Image 1 (cartoon, rainbow, N blue to C red):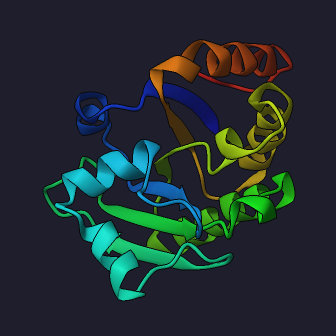
Image 2 (tube, rainbow, N blue to C red; image 1 turned 90 degrees about the horizontal axis):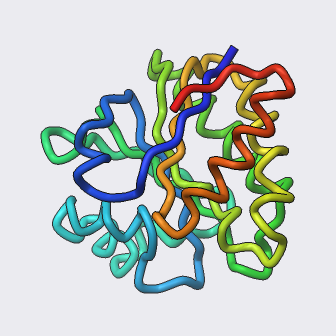
Length: 175
């Protein structure tokens, strides 16, 4: 069963996080990149922005781009998932993005991932109402053994509270 962890979304913490895959959800109509994607773009010397400018990656729904992280990040590879436009963002699509990430992990033989909230934090519905559904989806995704959410400091306590309530329902989690 998948363990769920939480870390701060900053480069120091991300550098210390040693997982197989870093998963980022980006929107087609959100520029510049924000949140964890913006931090990772900076760390990768603007690689994600260059993809967007060139049209190689657009953030359109269903798009997936896998990038070897080499020595710039603590994760072996970065998976960028297109979430579509902000009006298209719905929980079922975010759940599908999590499943797509698990399929990529399966193909890579990976078991641990670090991710942002895959767009939940950009929806009009409060995160405390939508995060439990994503946690349940991650519990069922093979082969994920550990999923670590990297969240912005202003959301940390809120996400921690939701995870704590979720954990009391019988799912494993760590900090």
